Image 1: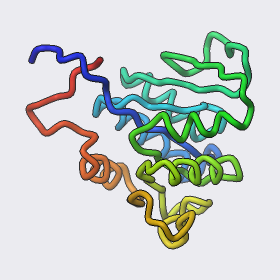
Image 2 (image 1 turned 180 degrees about the vertical axis):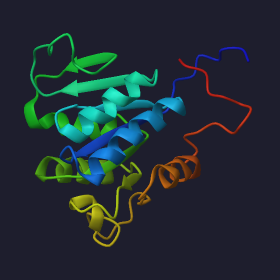
Image 3 (image 1 turned 135 degrees about the vertical axis):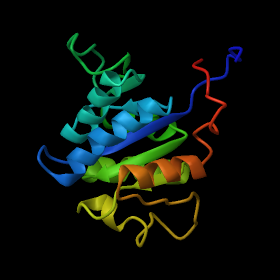
Length: 181
């Protein structure tokens, strides 16, 4: 297939989960899946869950864009193909919310809630991990508000996540792979 020059789909990975938890293991699997499907992973890589997703995407040959809050470049071993030091502190959350065609939400704390609300306001589909605890577990039942700005598509396994990504049209049909931009 001839390269068309179209950009690859992008999915932001938001949230937090600690090593050893089911959510952390699923974050790693999600990173590998995004790479396998040709989807660019966008992450701050600041929590263990978002970092392991990025590490696993890179290990699987995927592309990772990391938007970091400080204005300086991180260490050379930072798990990313491209690093964007924005120098905006917590205001970076808006960039994270806007940088994906959809936002994968794993667990989460206050920063994740901020990113999710901003993604919701800007009509980005939300893909919350369910069944593993954390803030993402109740997102379907408790959306940011009543406006129904975007779909909320829960997942509890890597297979369910792949089905949701396909439902959103972020994965090319079999036999018609997306070409990297």
